Image 1 (tube, rainbow, N blue to C red):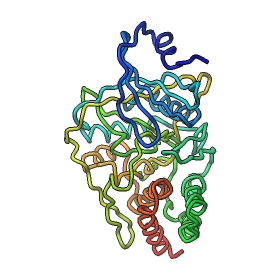
Image 2 (cartoon, helix red, strand yellow; image 1 turned 120 degrees about the vertical axis):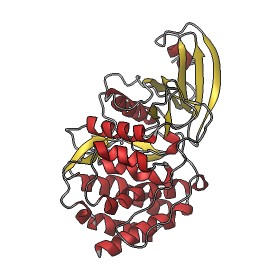
Image 3 (tube, rainbow, N blue to C red; image 1 turned 90 degrees about the vertical axis):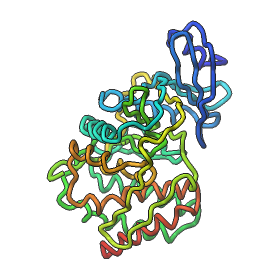
Image 4 (cartoon, rainbow, N blue to C red; image 1 turned 60 degrees about the horizontal axis):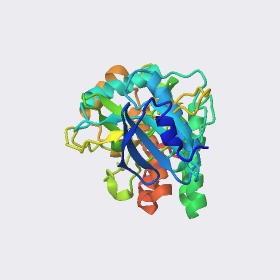
Length: 361
């Protein structure tokens, strides 16, 4: 192995003859991020000094799957590999962000187009397990969405909470919900679609032309509702203080109001890229699942009315959407509980208790 496989790839397969500058562009709780400027253009590189390449391989496969739909812009992944001193890296396309998050209605349309384009014949899941933040995300292919979401999403997080905190209360109540949630999906035709899987404000931006860009996926195949109605290898997770938690409703139909960030708020010009191809020969989807699950991070995404109106023009809203939405918020509240501690426990428990009352379970 080369002493510097990142430099070696850029100066060979990356078609550069000179690296003119390497600069930090921040990162997150998990990975470091750098911009490599060269005479052949710029590259975005993420590194992790302790986790092997499987995490970035999942991210690369997810990015590739979304990239191939030609619907919404994502960074093109180029290379994933191991670092000689331990850890791993991913090299990807560098995208220079614009000064704002762009037009929310365009984002809504493009996201819906991603969901329509990313169909799967394999069911719900992904070709590899991946991560959401540093939490493992099991993506075993499953033919039934309710089973997949109950076992590999909610059930997995509930088990983590019990193992990590000894929290048998949230585990027991959560398992009651998992066993009882079927009626929330009555009269719904379920078709797997490609999801980003971790769509919050830190993973949404726009390029210099104002076109929406989404990054850092935790992809899997979810379902989209059709009739009468996405491997995040996260690098930009946030602590409990980063997003204000909206108040939960006291009775169903559950409806957590959205508190949109100002879509036109100025933000520093920054860069993001994602790369992958040290994954040669691996043909995988990002992830297939229920399109409504894409809104699970809406409490920290800043989606406004124009976003939803545009989205539902392409992907019509199914009856019962409001009753199911908190079920998808719950997965992310549980994940944040497991990642960041008790600040998220009460929010998760409130959702569970509300559903148990509503379902009389």
